[in-house]
Amino acid sequence: SFPMAGNDKSNIGAVSVDAGGLVNKLAFSKGMLWSTYSVETECLLDGTAGQILAMEALPPLDFVEGKCGSTGTGGSDGSRNTITLIALSSDRSSFAVSVEPKVSVLHRWARPTAERIDPTVFDRCEQSTQASSNYASTYASSYVSSCASSYLSTSTYASTAADPKQVSLGQPTPLPFLPCLSWGWALVSGGGNSVTPILARAWGSCLQFLRASFPDSDGAPDDGAINWPAFGLHDEFNAPSPVVALNWLGKRSLVYLTITNEFTIVDTVIMTMQENLDFSSMNLVYAEFALSRPTTSTRGPGSNICTTFMNSIRSSDDRLMVLCQEEVKQITVLGMRQQIASLEEGGQWLEALALAL
Image (tube, rainbow, N blue to C red; front, side, top):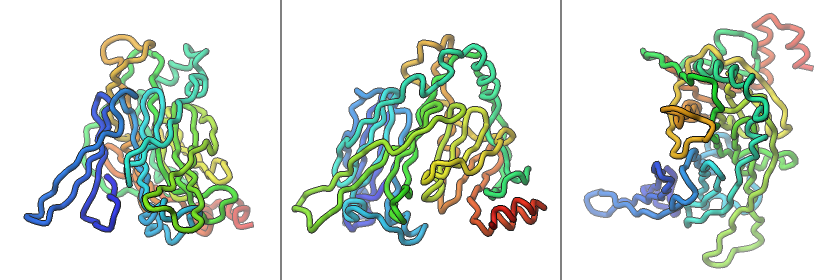
């Protein structure tokens, strides 16, 4: 869902995707009489791009400013506040699409090469056995079970009874990797305190960042003119193993979970790893996704079924919420003083002194 253009906050919109790749924009408006809603439908993608494997909406800038305090934006603030962006990904490309103030496909982003998605593509026999074994276990681990990290704080939010379900891949076969998308208002190197929309995409082992740059507005624009953003590759790197989920955590941190149960935090301003944790003991909730076109390397019944963890990890108020099968975990990034205090409480005095210096 997303807010509609204009000052009427009662009007909202949504984007729907069906199994055939048809993407529609739904605009809901509230009538004057009887408080009833009407809906208008507009096509974003007609299905020719193929099945949509991932979708993500950019949160409104005023929502980010309200949660994180006032932040500079640079460029055309009017365009940033009126243009609503979403990202869609098929099995061939990703798309940056404007849904407000009007529908427009702004950028097509081709998928990485096969070697970037899966570096072991030429030596899969030995690697696939280990990958399948790791994949068969449910993902993630609880930080509260270990004091190894001083950078993160994890707490249990709630607990419910659940019947854990194990992922089973059968024989070790090449795994079809689904794309993972995450929009964020992020800081960039040399940009000061200004935030800019950046789309993070993980496809297999390849992580890439697409930056949306809004033009500077010198004076009032012409009536009806829209300052559309320009898109360009901001940065990229390869993870040690395929990524199954990723999400922004604040304005300068990206977290991702790999197929080998590694939970990693990256500082996206200086592009360095901040923390790496073992998440192998936490039973993360997952969903099964049916591909309309099974990969040629898979065989047998159910070979078109993929597993996704993207809906199990979400960020809110600089917190990461991780949905487990029996509880919800909350992960937050600690500030400098909190990190030092955490090290002191754990008896790691030398590490605390080194961090303070």
